[in-house]
Length: 512
Image 1 (cartoon, rainbow, N blue to C red):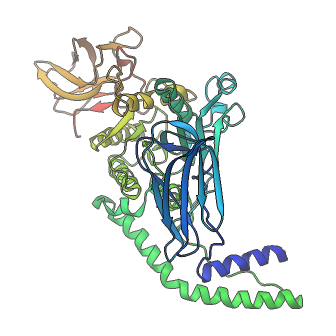
Image 2: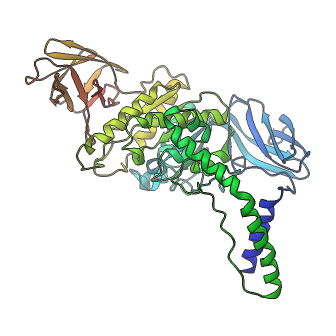
Image 3: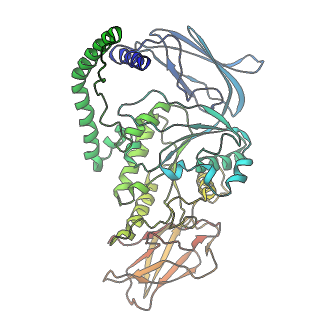
């Protein structure tokens, strides 16, 4: 008990006064076994005594330094510098010298991706398909893993409790399956080191992952942004009284420890946003500590907890994507996400359309620059919100990266996406982007899950046939059709795809 109280008193002395660093320290994301992003300057940062000079040296084994840079800690003890752009390779040793010396070993340069979301991103290799075989085969020393633990926070945190590890059968079982299968696909195609940072938490909404600047940049989310601003302002206004109460408790507790008097509980100083369900809380605790680590891009698999949002989810994705890009300061880096798989979320009236409306919002997010979407309508399980086939999810995300970021012109990376419609008598002809080498049916059966409607807005099941690179939709019950819907139900698993095996995304041509 006394040791715990002494620790709390020491912590409070840091909280009340300024932080004094006894030597150069680094965030955990900058550590041995890490992968630094190749072909661009790599940010290196940390903390030291104010005014302390720091020398950073990168060298290969038994060779002269290949890069050197310096930094000076500011008045608050913060410092940051950049290593010059390096080609893929390693291993290197990174020395950070100030009043003390830190040496990081087995450092590689390659491709770094941040992987985030809720349970389907967090879902580990150990309970994905063919897990025993996958774990036994996971010998990839150049694929490095960094798993951030679940830590919400009301205020931006500086660090996380995590380390970089090589991929082995011992380290991979509890790591994100989607992230690993994505990284493995890249590694096998690029033959360069891959760094995967997993920061995810099952059951969470998108709002906690979004930085304040992202929320503030979307007018439709003004109420959420104001909520965060008001809470932070109120918390700051209450701090003087809280600090006084803590100081008084600290003095009283020191005296009680000396006299063996009865101890009193420490005054509560919990931040109102320190809950994993509150806006910005997971960004503060699980993303901010790794900013501005050099990355190629980000993966996102989330939406189940927002499945009733409808099109407003597009605005929330805009806030997340633009917010991350702004705080990272690395431009419009690639942001690839997974469209949710079919699942029976709701039996309430109209509930079967919540998920299609979220699919629509996710598809709308493709209008944001440098984004991509992996469709999963054919590899889900309407009875299980956690489909076990994470291999294909990771592979489909990797196809976007290979085509868009790594110059693979021969890669088809998306299934058909609705482009336009034309009414032709009693039929409607649909045109698509991303037809690949042609349109087809997954099971060689007639196309499924197409519906058609007339002016009365009553949809009926439709016949759909492939005609070259288009689809013609009709029904004997509709003489004058005006709209088509495809896959517009939460449990729909349609068979329409391109010949590369990538499924079409659900859509509707109406705005009803």
